[in-house]
Length: 224
Image (cartoon, rainbow, N blue to C red; front, side, top):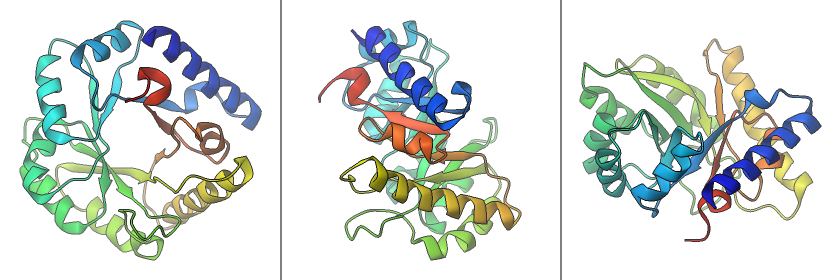
């Protein structure tokens, strides 16, 4: 089932890219495996999936250890509390949810020197949701410049989790705000290449708006 689901999601991405005049290989698929066990990840890997996203850090660390025999890429896409930064720094390849300088500084200081730099995205509260994590768009440039100067980290781009939109056009409008911010950062000399936006329900709108990485869980692994 997971292999068939992956094929279906890849087909959706390819169709969305074709509709937007983009190459299918311009959008990476991050399989969100939170709450699913190591066996589900192994099935996805057997179907060709290498990159996996996890929200719950301790659960993820246990899973990473159980799957150490596989060449997987692990992305932290959940909240990073101060007492969990060392685990993220030591075990993950990417952190998508950095929204404070303090978090970035701890990740920088705690990244083991034998590992490649931790790939970092800044989480942006693009639509101003009052309960959503993420830095305000107006504050992104200053934070990006500070993170880009930290050792042990490589700033790659922006990540968003906007509120559900009522239709395709509305979803595109929100994602386009992130793309505009991304382009503005480029104009300031920041060498970014990643827009982590779009999930199961809105990946087509995200791809249309310039996403380079969609985070899909339900359409691959099923309901939690």
